[in-house]
Length: 567
Image (cartoon, rainbow, N blue to C red; front, side):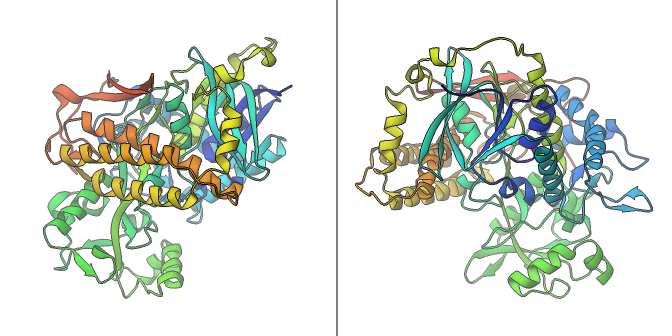
């Protein structure tokens, strides 16, 4: 007999751990399932900060207004209000479990990030993501919440719009198992590995978005992909927005601080979509510098900053570039280029973190409420994970734990996502019939396709070509077999991840084709203006009878109406 779980959380990053801790207040039957060891979750990489109203002249209303303007007015304003109004409580919670925020004379030391009127990004020794993860993980262990590591979730178990659990593959023991649960919370994080130029780790393959999509859940705002302005050329290692907050400048080949042309008030601290497009525009106009190996780039310069600023505010960047590149940033600018960084779109959820499938919830970057709209402001992702991770976890309090569910009565083959007659047997057979070199090559093709055709600047021609070539990659992959019996469990993992990446890419391209305007991170050269008359709406995509269907949903506007977006 299969175990029955009250709350099963997929993903062990900040949103997953926060959901588990909240759910454990209402149930002692909470489990986390993760394809990675906890401290390898992508959340540990966050270094820019976490937003909270912390200076006397700041306000919740200003925080809300900045977030909505930064979103290019596509954020749902009820969701933004929930996010902002819960930030102080979550900061207090983090302090109560041992997160030490940087302070000066007992006052929070906050940085001003792009698109913010005031300094509100808190940090913890330049390791905010790691600090939060360590303390949350300690709390999870203290509460004896079980974590099942190295399990790759393959699909949801569902029928008639109701989720009953999931099926997962364990890469340590070559084992496939079904897990049944009252509620499933997807907290699987980013999808950035579908691009070749990304700051995300190789594990960020959109798993939660893809399994929800295949189960028939609505996805929302998938066309909005954030490119961070400053990644190191070649490696795409992120140079945090804190660098520009501390005073670093962007220069073109003529030594011009070119952001004066694009955002004369905010300069380098304009929102990320504006800075990234400005960099690409400089390069397209022949004003980029040239690297013999990697091509065009722009300079990020620290050379005018004092030693005290470099040592007190940017020591992590100084140390990293010194050890990795043998570059002294006090003397030599960094070569930077924009890289994919964040997905504003994801699984459609409401303010209770409910998806369009009953008993299925989601939180964090794999979800879309939408609090970020067409562009996320720096410092808002970590607080989103905490606020909505908590909300997702507390939903178990609404379930009657005395209600019995006969797991053995569920016809597994009928309820599993892909509707295969012998699902587990088919997956096991595939383990020895996958050409892993072909999988690797297909992954590289997908990443190159997305980077070339679905990047910062888009057109109908590029997107249509991308959708056609994506279909070819997918068809060839599913029809390709080999007799390779030496595939390891770990390497086979990449096959399942690629299937998910292809599904996520399909949703992004289809949504991008539909939205015939430019808004936030979605810039169409053939429709270069924002069009509130026709496109002040969210694009929804759903897989129905193996066909992708699109629809529109109105943006929720309370009292902040769309305006010009100048910085």
